[in-house]
Length: 220
Image (tube, rainbow, N blue to C red):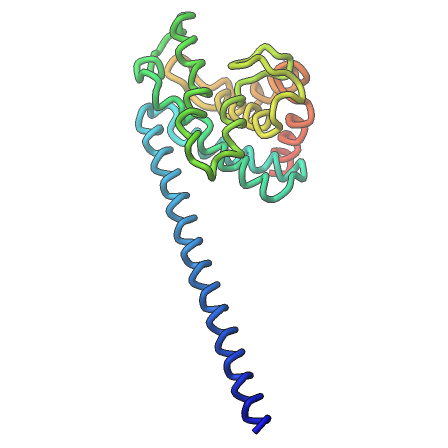
């Protein structure tokens, strides 16, 4: 009798265990579906930004790639690398709220026009502020135009007060801008971009970030 009861208890335990693991699989599948949907929505936002100007098409993808490479070279935690990569994709999302004629202007922007364009980091942070999954990367987006010497925008942060992710984005963003054509000029080129990064280490750019980026380029 005791053996039968023991067997029945074992069967019940096995069923509960199987049910539990099945539930975990269902939860995991649902999580993966939501994560896939989230990434697709991010891509939709980036595509919407790319349609505003053919001159910047692919810019966010490249900044994301460069930023990820820098973060890996700096041996940053894997989770933080993912955040920085995602921030690279979304760093210019605030330009959705910028007038197309400013993004397409073939000549130099006036001071007033540049003041409008300079609002895009904060606009990007405001656009994304209600998405809980993006809480970690919003400071990177908001401060990716801060300069190491405190002469950037929007808050004139300097040195280590600038989030590391934002310092990485600034280098990646600047390099891609200097190696891409714009409506007001042809791309100065890679040699020019590398010289600018080197000459402005410790002023506009974080020295360690620049060195990490140069290391990734040398490896390629």
